[in-house]
Amino acid sequence: MTKHVSPVRWGILGTGAIAATFASDLALVAGAELAAVGSRRPETATAFARRHGFARAHGSWAELAADDEVDVVYVATPHAMHHAAAQTCLAAGKAVLCEKPLTLDLASSTHLVHEARTRGLFLMEAMWMRCNPAIRRVAELVAEGAIGEVTAVHADFGLAGPFPTGHRLRNPRLGGGAALDLGVYPLHLAHLILGTPESVQSWARLTPEGVDENTGMLLGYASGAVAALTCGIGGATRNAASITGTRGRIDLPPEFYVPRSFVLHRDGRAETVELPFPGHGYQYEAAEVQRCLAAGELESPLVPQTATMEIMNLLDAVRAQIGVTYEPDPYAALS
Image 1 (tube, rainbow, N blue to C red):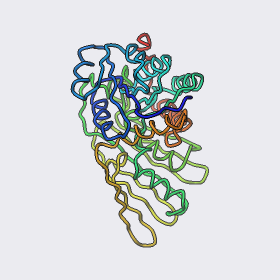
Image 2 (cartoon, rainbow, N blue to C red):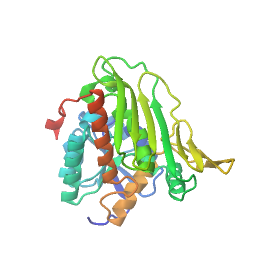
Image 3 (cartoon, one colour):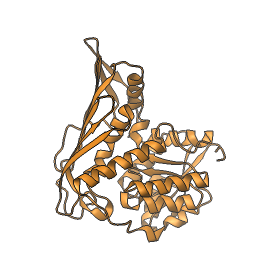
Image 4 (tube, one colour):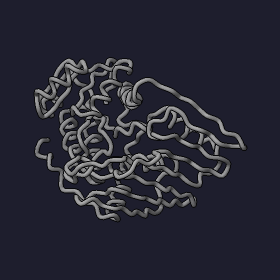
């Protein structure tokens, strides 16, 4: 992979809410250029480009991927479109930052990773939580032994709803359900702290459409540690997390996936660590992508492809246990 010199010319594939938030945070990243946006509808792409200051708008994924003045594409489509969209960009020689989860299952994620490695292209799952300054500091403290040997991770992510029939969170054709959309965060946190578990036990209540509405996951580790994780789209939980060790505990506040602070408990004292930042927090994953491109790295050590694959394997296991299945990618023909 050739090292890239600033500015890094960004393309965004998709024009929804998350694409808009990412575009606004790109303005906070030194050396980031808002080059182009692509959508399946030209008018939508044009409106997005004007609203967010992108130089060009494209009316198809292929046109964006073929744009010679784009270095890296951020894929911001619903889950079920990730594989086809990312493959389109990789086939055109573009580096890719793809929204989480990378795809709907391990098999299609494996395919994308293989494609990127074969072509010598950068690929990263947009798990922005792992690039967050507070999360990085928590991981450092745990690695340093600040709370002793980790014995448990607890995390929950639940949205109140109710979500109407047809909403993407209830639509199996769009990869709906709590696990892929919300549960991926508790899973990534547990993986960051404890690695890959020895066992996975899951239970869920399903919606009439057949996606998970309320899901619990219990992970067991060779060390004896456990991770108790929940996610749901039928009730607003605290959305907080804690990491417990033999010498102390770290508490992550509500919205644990984008924290600006945490509390370190040890030796009978509680210390609040604050790491405030402007924007929404997406700038850190964008900056990490640019750092990797400048260094000629094909993947990020903060969000390594092995971690993405292990999480996808866990999600496959969870879905198998709770009985959630998805149809083949209905947008594959668009690649």
